[in-house]
Length: 174
Image (cartoon, rainbow, N blue to C red; front, side):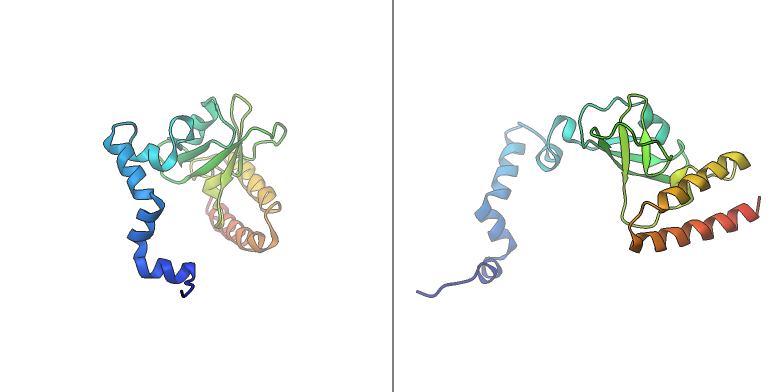
């Protein structure tokens, strides 16, 4: 009898066969067909395991978090602006980090919401907008630059260049 590697086995039966062999498709289909749950519950879990959606940072800060590592999708920094939103994760073990308005948001209940990101951040992620006062945008700039110093060296170079370019071009026009 010839021994076959897992790679060859999976390649020979295809993805549908692999899913069927593991029971993945059967279980999801059975749950939905039996009316026990929906597809979203099957994929993401039920109850508090779902990603909560918020219109703005203000609505996120007003939310009472019930679970550590809860994930929140914020649509925009300011309601209706469609910029500056993103994914955040609740960190119940952190009770001391101060809000910087961008990578760390502290809610009214004390929950620290930490931004989940892998690309360079923009000033809008910290609350920048043209209609802010000069003092408000100075705070935004200060917080963004302080946050960029806490990013790993590879990301710091990329993020800092975006922040500096964005700040100089926008502040010069005010």
